[in-house]
Image (cartoon, rainbow, N blue to C red; front, side, top):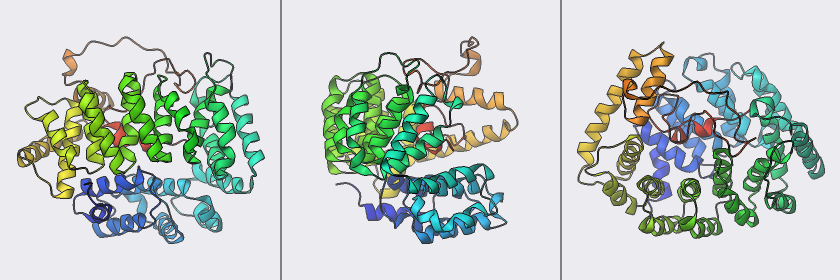
Amino acid sequence: MRYPADKIKEAILHPDIEIRARATRYFAKSFSSDFSIMPLVIKAVETYGRQNDAYRLIGLSRDLPQSEDTISWVIDELDDPQSDQYENYTYNLSMILLKADPAVLLSRESGILEARHFPAALHSAITERLQMLSWDFATCWEKLEEFCEEGKEKQNTSEINLGYAYRIVEALARYGEECEEKVCQLLAVKIDDYSHDPMKWLEPLAVRLAGEALLESATPLLVAKLHEDGDLLGSACQRALSNIGTSAVLEAVAEAYPKAPYHFRLYGTGPLEYIHTDLAVEKCLLLLADETDHGLKCHLAHSLLSQFAPEGIEVARQLLVGQELDFDEKGLRNHLLETCTLTGERFAEYDEWMATEKVEKEEHWRKIKELEGDPNGLLLFALEKLTGKKAADMPKAEPTLPAVSRMALPHTSKQKVGRNDPCPCRSGKKFKHCCMNKQRQF
């Protein structure tokens, strides 16, 4: 039986910041509609202080539903003369406002724009979101198609205002099932050549819209898109399926998984992690029984632990015990230890692995401090952690051409931080479990 959600809520007030963040992430990344979570985050920030990594809880909270009271608290924090002293704190507070329901923000527009630490660079985004509240269904579609048509010759996301497009998608999603016919028509199109075609942008935006509008009927089409190789499209489909969050999604992903290519199985573990139901646990265990790839087994075990399913503890332990751990496996060990610390469950190696992890974290932060002001050194250190090799032992890389967006060209490679790479924020966690979901275009 999965650990009760009410107990996970209580852990948002746990003395350990890692456990507080883990509990907050459980609700935020599952697109929770529970308005009681943000007040607990606020209580945690006020209990343990803003200087003690509070930015991490606030950063996660952009995906939580906000009320009039929590928005008032955020604005008050942004008005506090001392708030900008804390790492990333005011930025993450501002991003909560950029993600909150615009209907809740409408009466607070002047207070937001005049807040002492609300960045001027975000003013236009807030104003646009509020203006779009007045757009009807036809206007939203017209603006979205116009955006994609104007960008059809662009090859890189840096050349377009993708944030504006996301805001149109948000406005369209308010019309719910009215979007269904158009979205399904777009997702049914098979594109062989994205050059000079507005679909290079319209396709991933339609995927995003399917998720935000909770279009369960689009599930088979999203699962089909997940077969197409491309990090950006894969991430978009994973997010959309997780957002829809129904049993039909889990059934469709699990049915396709065994015969699907590697990239499908990699991204397919996302809904199994973020849709919090007993069925997700059942499907994880079923897929684990036949999975032969060790890395994918670790991902499925991670999903089980994210569900706080007790079965995941022994599954993860068996994958780790007696092994010389690589970066991914250390991430799974960290997740296993967090799970057991939060739930009170224990296994034979718990104390030993906790002691090992403590030493590794201390060494990690000692090295980070030593390399302050040396960006090349920090990059090499991150590569060493990822590959398990010393910099001197790694092959010298040839100079690479400038990166091209994989949204524009889904089947070309791109120089970027991978979802399983060490996070650039130096937390020691994987990018996908730290800052990947914080990235947003304005």
